[in-house]
Length: 216
Image 1 (cartoon, rainbow, N blue to C red):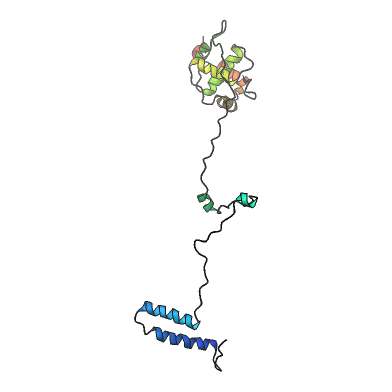
Image 2: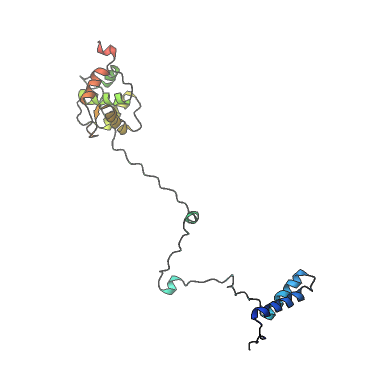
């Protein structure tokens, strides 16, 4: 049964009186810890202190039934935390290296010392081949006009380098394509039928000739 308040007294007034009496009783203890304990006990006895809500036990766990007992396995996978946390949790995987494609050309066997025709060594000895552009163009010219090849590929040009003991480009196909784009001496629209242009033939016949060969 609820206690009735005297006329003119509110619940707030009653609580103030209770707390004053409790404070006076607690102050009689010399030990602060004992006084604190007595304060809580008195407040609880008076019904003025709120009781804390009960918390779940720390070791309480929710056990999920295995898939073979529930008849299905539709439980969604655990979601990864967003943002930087996902990067920290997810294991790092190495990026797969791109597979190096096979080259589109092969070395071919070419006789650079044909009977009745000028050898390649004599042909280049008469010319100043200062760079890869000049060498690529001279080799295509020789294969086309001296040996009579009509289907000249990258492998034929590399074979010329090998025959002379010269070091070709690391990427011969790209080197030949750059010769065409940079100088206009070669036509490489079909890399299996490379040939010299008019300007390229003029360069090999006249501009690349050494002074000694041109006056002979």
